[in-house]
Image (cartoon, rainbow, N blue to C red; front, side, top):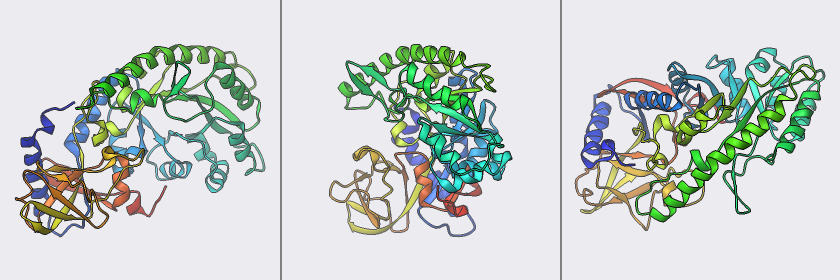
Length: 414
């Protein structure tokens, strides 16, 4: 959904503000030059909190990958806890006191990280691992000599839509029906050294797919229909699963679920409205990458950018920047490429696209950039941008007010 922040005039003003802040910095800055606009970040955080309607938001660290930004989100009223993307990352977040409540979003068979978890009562009391198969429990037990340190467990339940015999949604968990979930829950409850504390149901077909894409009216209509069908179906299935799990309460040392995690930046309203859900998750909505530009439910302010210098002028109609091939993960397509954003009027060429070493740009304003000028891009995804640099410049107003290391800058590769 286009808004004032996407207009050519706004993009040109943004280019002046970003480049002006770089020029005012007392020392040269390396490229790709990563910048986060803190004003936009905070505005997006406030919007996410409003959309969640009082339900706590867990920060998706995969969408940030900068500890200072994770902390900034957690300092915002309405946010609580972190959704980590690896167990090794979760251990680091706890050890470095970024958070004392970390839910790992995906099952782990990382032997080193699992061994560290079961050896640390402090970490084990603050981290919840994800399982969807008894083999995940076996992987833990294979690395410990006693069950003195209980491991907190959440069950990942597939939240896709079943429609006309087809499954629509992320291919995450093998657990779908009530019986399969209850069976694994019973195994967790009856197994020494584990404590069942939560459930996760991530409806990616609602949270992570744009539904108001220009020039894709038919596809957008289909996506909206999938979302309309998914929400009530999942609401009923969550209720049925919750009822089955409630029967386990009081069995052995099981004391009931502490959390039921759901949703993402694109589905906060519907996820938070489900009475079973105790918390929602958001991360990409804080930075507003290009894949989140075309949602009916919300319109985040672009907050993350990377700047590349013009190094060549092969013709009057082409300006070539150094680097640029920061391609997002997912199904290969044009929407995974970075977008030349500021100044406006620049685009990738069909022949070269975004290159590892150089990216030629053409378009209505391609004649204006001079050698040495910065062109500002937006990444298609949120946290993946920060795998390409060690330091993020933090912008407030027209000034760079601080610098923050990325995971890469701290020597971490999760």
